[in-house]
Structure formats: C-alpha cells, structure tokens
Length: 290
Image (tube, rainbow, N blue to C red):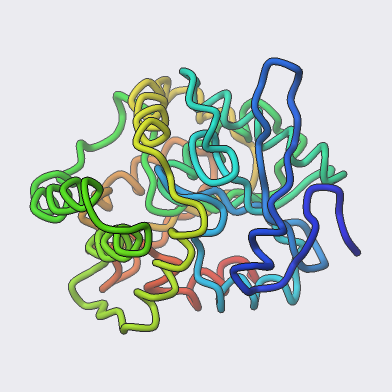
C-alpha cells in the first residue's frame, strides 16, 4: 500500500529518487524527506552525520522490507532535506522524525539509530515516548559529558584530507567514489569491502550528496547534545550495539549508554567497526527479529 510520505518502494537508484517526498513542518521550514517501503510493523532507520536515508545496504533493507514497513528519513542537512542547514539541535531532529511518523500515519515504531541517528532515536524516546515501541542504538554515544572522546580524526586524518582535496576537483561520480572509500575506512580492519560494495555506496552518494554546510550543522547539533541523566527516563526496551573495532566511537561508549538507559541490553560485536549494518547485517537482523 502506498503511503503519503513516499511515491515508490523499488530498489533501483531511480526508484529511490522517486521515493523522496516532502514532509512539511510549517511555512517557515524546509521539507523533511523520507524513503518508505515494505509492509508490516513500522521500523524507522536513522543514519549518521552526513548520511541520507538512502545510505543503507540495499540487500539488508530489502530483507527488512519483506517483514517491516521501513521508514528512512533524510535528516536535516542531508539528501532531500539538504536545504535545511540553519542551526538546529538533536531535539529538532527528533521532532522531525515525529513529524515524518505523523505524515506516514504511523502511531508507533521500532527505531534503529546509527551513530548520530542513535542520539536522535534516544531523544525521540524522551520527547515523543508514545511513538517509540523499541530502541536499537548502534555505534553511538551518550550525551556529553558522559561519553568517551573519539579517536576518529587521528587514524582518518589522511583520508579526510584527500576527501577535502577531491571536492575541489573531479566530477560528481569521482567525488562520490572518494567519499564511499572514506566511509569504509570506519570499518574494522577485518572487514574487506569488495568493488561491488564501493560501487553501491558511490551510487547512493551520487544521487543525494550532502553539502559541507549540512555536515557542519549536524556536527554542531551533536556537539551540543548534553544531559546524560535524562536517559534514565527512557522506559522502552533498548538494545545498544557496539563494534569492538570501531575507530569512530569507542565501545566503552556503548557500555556507558546502556548503563544510563534502565534495563538496556548491550551487545559488543567482535571484528566489527562503525558501519555495523554493512559489516554485520545478520547480527542486526537477529536483534530486530528477537
């Protein structure tokens, strides 16, 4: 059944492009876009900094859509929502998700958040608890000052510098390939992506690139997210998942996050880095089906 938030549910890049539809939040706000597909219990996927709702493993989402009504918002600053780069907070991003659920006529959903998306998911459970059935928080951190600082910029300084240089020259596709390889540098050294995976990521990135201003606005929101004691008010079943080889988010952050949310489970995956949906898709499917 076609929903108001989306116009198509196919997996091709062109179909995904058609699937983007605006969710209006008032006359002074830009539209917040989402991709929607599948049938069954509703599942919201919230991505990390700079990553639109397109940027998930295609085969993994295809499996999810066989059993779930999957909603993938483009957070402000990314994808179809890339025009919304005025200052905003993680709370604003959570309100955006609630608005997407309103427009999709979804009362409640399981919410899976990756990296920044995990912060938004936790904030959604605080601000709109009735909309959240269950939380799955992946490769993410608790609010400041409870999190362990990341070592992200050290091992990835070289790739980041090359990425910045690449944006100064070359075509859209070349930039997308460079960015895809940068994303994959956040995986565990044990994970060796093949050429098909690089091409898939580059295809998705080429369709809806994220402007630097959007990344900066999201980064400001993440840095300003504070109040770890608030998470003790979350009363939804919660699973925290961390990769033991994550160069972006140290796995201790997962333990600290799980300790703050009453009754939360914490699962650490050996040989897995930051991009759990790509590195350990079956493990995530198992958690969602449990």
